[in-house]
Image (cartoon, rainbow, N blue to C red; front, top):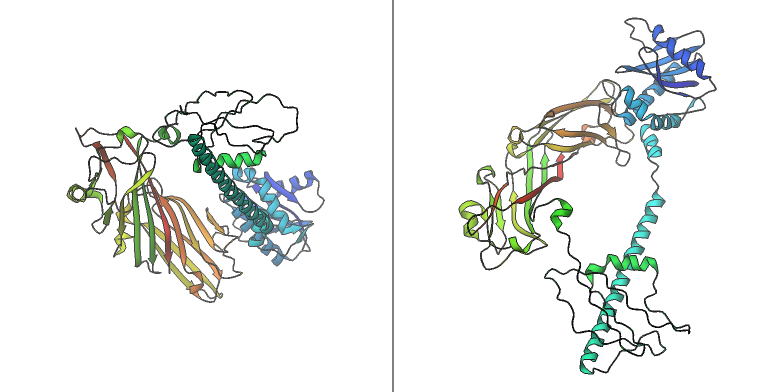
Length: 529
């Protein structure tokens, strides 16, 4: 077979994108594409039309046509097979077929087409191989990146070790200076240079530990000899030291002596940037996280269910650390949820009204770090605990393939939730290529080059989006078990078991305290077996 060109055009014959695999002038291909729609007979069930010189093999794509222009001597069966591969590759690149999408992804589309046909002849490739070539993943590059990261980590560890060693030497020098005021530790630079004693009028550090880069020491009088220079390090080493600065105390800078002691003014600590200004949070911030592990049968029945969650409290201002009460909504929490509070939390206060407060009112919540104040676990026992029901219907066909219908539905108990970035992964037998009733895969459906599984991406389920959907395809398989287990992943911004912070206030006067909450819900394991 000889493929002269592949193109996508409108139903009126306007070319959208075209790739010539043989020498054809632009006027010639435009004339062929313009005359193509007029050759299609009304009500025809065929997907091929011929002229005196060429053959058109085409497939409708919504309001467009995907067509191959071949010579009349080519094998029509091979032409149809090539057209099917062109259709799968086009659907994989575009996801949604429209004239704007074709123009926007024209470069990727032409690159993928070039992997199918070379100089007019079909290459022996499939969809997985084409996707792998387009992604251009390199195993050697990944290995080099791992080696580079390991070397950088080793350099950081070595710098930490040296910084700690220098800190020990500094402390030893301070002890000797206190015991002997006239003592000055020698330097590694030689030539009689010494450090001045550590000044005693050091500024008071704030309560929260924060380290600043020390001021550079005043330069000693110029020395004509070629003595060793202190502090001369490579730029990369300085960058790594800056990264580990929070882990080690900074070394004090001592003024050098050149006949007389030089005093250095103390530098005031830099003002910390409030965390709420950096991350857009209130000074009183709560982080709620949940992780779901769930297993369903092929008929949609619940096999196992386990949800674990935690609530962390983070305060960025010491003024709000004392006398806080965090109230949850008891009515929204599932009855089967088991809670466990922090040992310092008043358990009687929690049991009486789902309110979190310190047992010892004289103590304060920690400032500048997250404190886990509450944990919970929920083991559902029936289908009401399943947020997204998945039902699979595999059935054999007379052609030796299997037809699989998969349906999802948001459970009524979770109708107020919105599941985002839902990915349903269906394993495919080795070497199997799915085919769809409409020819091209539905929007969001693709075959993963890494796992070989069919992946269905649904941006959102619930809310303003549809709460149910289904997909149907056929694939070569020896047994229905080859399509299982089906893996599901999603995230949500609302607790699945109803944990909700409704109020934060002070104990004295019950004054409301402004607060913010981040909720992250994801799936550790969600599968259909």
